[in-house]
Amino acid sequence: MAAIIKRNTPLPHINSTIATTAEDNQPNVEVKVYRGENSLTKDNEFMGKFVLSEIPSLPKGEPQINVTFEIDVDGTLTVKAVDLSPQQGWWSKQGLSQSMVLKDGLNKLSSSEVSQMRKRIRPYIENEKKRKEKLNIIDELERVIYTCHYIVQEKIGWVNDMSSSVSTAEILQQLLDLKKRIQKTANISASRISTPSSNIYLENIDIREELEEHVYTLRYIIQINMDWLEKNQDATWADLLYQKNRFFDFAKETIDELSFTTNLVT
Image 1 (tube, one colour):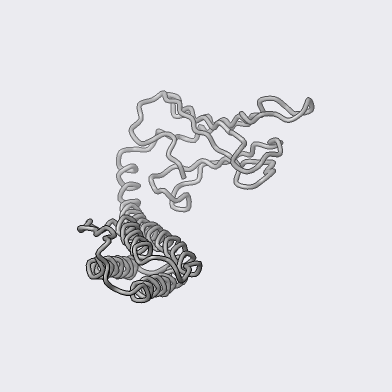
Image 2 (cartoon, helix red, strand yellow):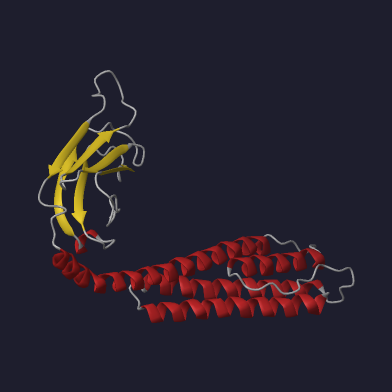
């Protein structure tokens, strides 16, 4: 639900928004009008609907449907949808439009009725706030997990293609790059990051094993978290927050371990 005319807006008022299609070659767009303050239509009062038909066949997202809401001082609401999409062929109808008028006392609620409505929606507003917080945690966790997954897969590709003659400095550079990118992705406070030095005294096989151990361990932990997130989209806010903190702690521990490794060999 998108709020087109918000509460306490002075009348008369007119406002519009651009809608589009959700599927390729979608021929119709249904415009539904609700009254309420919840972001989910199911929790608001349904006022009416109409259909804009004969939309040109275009890929989803390309049609431009201008939906205008106009309310006068008497509370009469007129909703109109106009197809602004580029028309295809001489047979296409130009400026397809559809509208409806709602006169059913949109601004005739008494102050007590408005007060009662606000009391009824207050629990929904609190629930909506919690729902948004939960979605924010899911979004952040997904972003960090999948970005780390991409980084690690890239490093595993480098490890698999690594020749026996690759220098210790080159391997060390990959470790440092791994550290920097995970640090940035998980927004971990930057610590001093070492740079490759010519005074390296460990054998190539040692630092090679360090890189392999880190990237494959990372891949294992990331996969566990990806699987958990996929299976627990309906988890409680507390469980999601715990999983997020747990993964971020793991990312920080990885950074600390990589710091130890790079300091050891430089």
